[in-house]
Structures are given as C-alpha cells and as structure tokens.
Length: 98
Image (tube, rainbow, N blue to C red):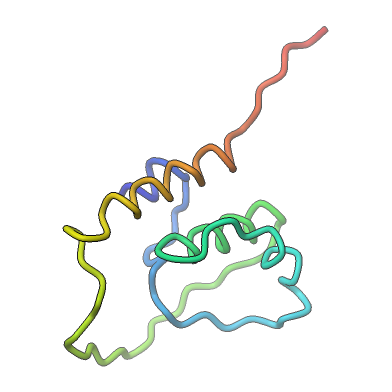
C-alpha cells in the first residue's frame, strides 16, 4: 500500500523474488539503481516503467519456507526510509512556464 501511495506503482507484488527479463533490455535500469536491499525491486520496476518498458505480471506457484530474516519490527525503519528516498528520486519536477 505504501509503495502505491509514495511511489505510484500499480503493480500487485513488487517484492516477489522472481523477475524474468532480457539483460540487454534493462541494463540502463540496473545502472540507475540506488536502493539495493528492501526496495531494490521497487526501484527497478519504477525505473523500467519510467523508461517505457513493458511489465507483465504473471501468477506463479510459490512455496513459502519458514525462516525469513526480514522483520517489520527490525527492518521497518530501513524499508520506510528507502521508500522516501525513492519518492524523492522519482518525484515529478514541475517547472513554471516562462
């Protein structure tokens, strides 16, 4: 929900670990990444969309395994700050007509 509000992404699941793409077609987006941990996926997807790349969401079967090291309590602040850095990075600058 915060990703949708702060960054404007309409994707259903930005944190899904499965991404398939042609390396050559997204090399610029990888070079422009500024977030590498919890919001790296958000940064990548937003960069692709801003560069008119087509994103197709597909349903996959995913087997969840216990033992995740990510905790909203432990990592929530870092996640939240990353989202605000991305909001600043992708802000739309409005210029006045002269």
